[in-house]
Image (cartoon, rainbow, N blue to C red):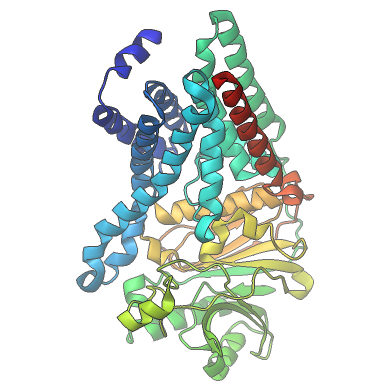
Length: 503
């Protein structure tokens, strides 16, 4: 191992960066839809070796940035899809969007990789990288409204380690993933016997905890309320075309009224082709089609402050008795930063149908669904933020996500979005019901298991019993406070140790 590191140390920064890009791409293959988690672990371990050859913090930062470019370039490749909905107008922007977001997200990795040798010194840099990269990923989740898509923890979606998110959250699971890779490499500097023992304890501890956290087999009682989830399969380029609007609307009316007696019918995000304040007859038609069941609809509305992306609950008379406005909006998709200047330039958000973007709602809120209990509504993008789900005013009985994943294309984006939603269920110990325009519509139990679903790109509806919630999880009580505290102590301790060593 020492000989390999010594030879790599002689390579130029450009060669190391090229290798790092490739290792970043391989690391990304652990995410959905590929699911090659073992390849992520192997690639990260090799990346630790490459990083250990860096001559100083500057070269370490360049290696981290290059690895991030490869990782995010693959994982966020779906970002080009919105620009391809109207290729003639926006297609030319697609490569710039991908390059921009991959390069921008990679700056967080550059920060983590650059801080590690600065704080831990050359000897302890690979071990310090576990803390600094985890801290950088935390920063990515919060800074400038945050964008925590594609966290390393998500390679465990559907696998036993995913259950550890109920204890330590997704960022804690990211730290454990880095401990398995960077930590295992770091201990190779110890004498062989100690290295084998320490590395074995790391793996045995995490594997053992994952097995211990395995969820029980739980059957949903037959007397639980029934929820019907609709998936009209309206491709984004067709959704607002005048000749197709009535087709998709009628399809959802038909699904709402098919045989069965659901207690609640759920339409996806922005699935009603009218503004809420102008939709009295439309809402009555929807309610009548549902045969008296409650209906939750995705709809746009206007107010004094602007336009909103909303979820409305209709009673049996078609009245919108409860309304939730999406509060965590997509930058450049649903609003444009610097809106006043952007408006004068004619720049508008992709997803908004009226005006130059949406107005954010006041924040997380619970909706009372009567006999179904209280649900925390999540509109599309909001489901990727663990801190927002944990920020509900009180503990809900279940989570309800409506989304229009047609914006994300048909390859990686919708699968990654579902994987992240599954983590929200595990973190909170709550079932999650998800109605998606083009897919993937799903019923998820409080342990992140998909009980039933409608595949991507299919039209249909799904009737499911509402699963019972599990007991509140440790993470649902503490959030990221414990990890913030641990990382702060670790980084402060490293700075103190570095100062002592320099004296």
